[in-house]
Image (cartoon, rainbow, N blue to C red; front, top):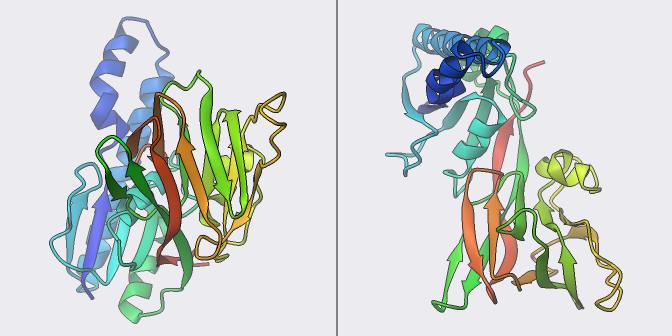
Amino acid sequence: MVVLIVTKTTNYELHGALIESKVNHGLVPRDSLTRLKKAHAEHYETLGRLRTALAAAGITWDEVSRDFPRPWSKSYDLVITVGGDGTLLAASHQLAQGGLIAGVRSSSLSVGFLCCAGTAEIEALVAAIANGTLRSSVVHRLKASVKRVDVGDEIETTPVLNDFLYANANPAATTRYRMIVGDREEVHRSSGIWVATATGSTAAILAAGGERRPPEDPLFQFRVRELYKFDLGAPVIEGGLFDPATTELEIENRCPAAILATDGQHGVIDLVYGDRIRFKPAAPINLVRALV
């Protein structure tokens, strides 16, 4: 079993000195720093516990940081992420051809809906790895190709496990675009468009009015945010399910500057007027499920 641990730099390591200075000058409440220190300590306790358990089981591993994305040096039978959902999402982008991934929630203050274990379950997780009894399920991913009109080329995103957001580069400005869904076409003004997998259906797209889907569902969905309906031919396309293998979903950007964000902050493509985005299926991954 060839194992890779993907870990994160904690927010205390990234921002602790600045926040501590602000606390000491009375500019922000002390509990801001207390929470950062708590999450930092819990993260390293979890990481140390995982290393100890793997060593005791005779399992060797490599270790990389999610904050320095680069092609991994070799293929791995199992990727274990230590952090929260953000760390798992970042690591999943490296699994272009699929693979097995297990998320460990390293702090009680981290979000870990996609994680299969927390600090207390480390030993049970390692025992399941050693015994070959991990339970996983196939989850489907999505990628996008962007045809860039200014340079005449086409680029493809890494596979996305949660969602895409297409929006104006200025979050307060109107997002203008032409949208094609199958044989339907409309010109819109809105706050942008969410495009999500079933895994991502419980995240931002749900808050925007989307539909919660079963985790293993192979269909994807899109949802327009705050569609302006009072002219432009009274647009009616607001969202729905689609299979990119049979139904084309295309967005033609009509903003001077826009973005396509991949899994939140885990990647951004800058767009200019006329760039076109098409969505297509990506290789699925096997996500380790909760141990109990």
